[in-house]
Image (tube, rainbow, N blue to C red; front, side):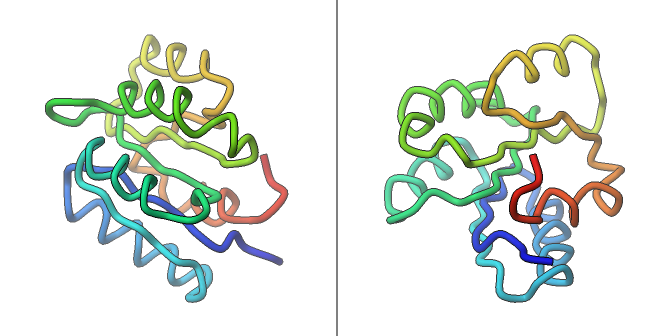
Length: 130
């Protein structure tokens, strides 16, 4: 199995970023993990990286700017040059309207419950998996 080389975690809850980071390192300790606690922080990280992370996990509900704000900014500034990056939207509540809205964006590969991290994480880190 070949894993992606880089991941960006976007969540205002440091515990969620820590847990996700630890799960990622268990899958493959060579994956470079970038953590952002806001959309603004994530955009700054993306602006300073030479290559966009292959996988991005973004929380839906965050203060100030939310996960949908990130998706819109990503589509405007990064999608054209990074069509193969995979974005997964995470939420602690799976509101159907949020899922429909998320899946309306071509760059979003799935809308997943944070409670299911252990069952979806490893497969989303594999290269070539949509």
